[in-house]
Image (cartoon, rainbow, N blue to C red; front, side, top):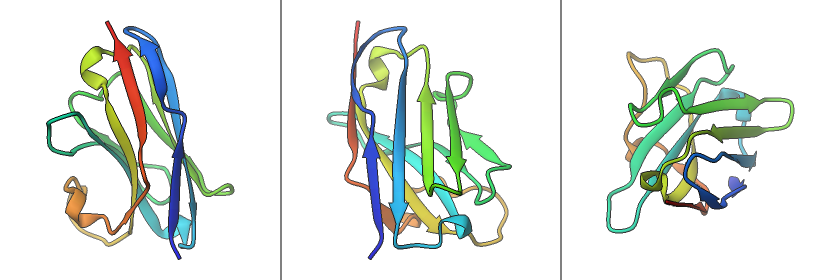
Length: 127
């Protein structure tokens, strides 16, 4: 049974930082592309960032680029999201997602392309 468990969410002031973590089990972690998505109140889920199975390649949404950093520890089956210079518009529930790697052009940016999901962790950024 695949489990993705996020942690690290909370309340932070604008300009602050948070580090989210996702612990994975029940899958071959080193064969998975890992992604972070978020869903703000009243909005659709959106892609934030993803990392390749080996960790050598990453992709960021425009809103995350330059402020967020995704990383993974394949020895510990964890993926992290370091978020700096947080803004009120970053307020959302953040979800970790996984899919087995498949060679193709480009990244998987659509949540429907990820079969495995965590329960989410809430991030609130106050102004």
